[in-house]
Image (cartoon, rainbow, N blue to C red):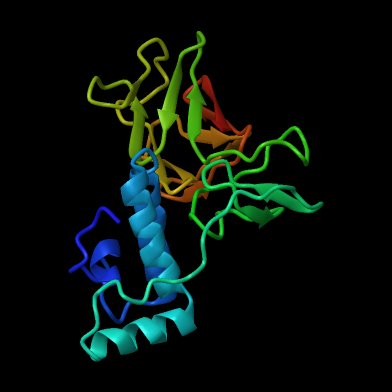
Length: 223
């Protein structure tokens, strides 16, 4: 591991010793995406996650800490291996190669966001990266944080050739492959697939959705 051995698995993941499984999983999903290109750190946070997400392994690890053992002395024995075959009804994680049941939104081993291609079953899982297609062919990649659409130069996506677009018209929020859109009280409103959005209401975006701000159509895609 690249992380110092005096760090506990809780410290590696940045969670409290009494963290719930959901909190541990959410922390891991953030870290595994952050360190996707840093194999030593990727392996470190994965090792920590595998020790804490399983109740039995976690109890053994906590007992080891209570007895004064090394912070990482109770590493789980499970080793990620790239599958040699892909049984029917399963998809392969493009990051770690683990098999996941069709329909899973996250890889059960490395936590990578998974999306099935809209073209049908059997294709390569999508990575949960959003793309906003603008008029004229330009695109904006959406991965983390917020993207504000409007006429003002301070916006992330600036639309100046549509007088029906407000200075700050709509906001897209991105969190671990989940995308939601919200109208910011624009004068002429926002529509999702032709349905007007209520001011302040957050609506989940799906692959292929058409977001209309003013009279400008923006196509949303998940890759």
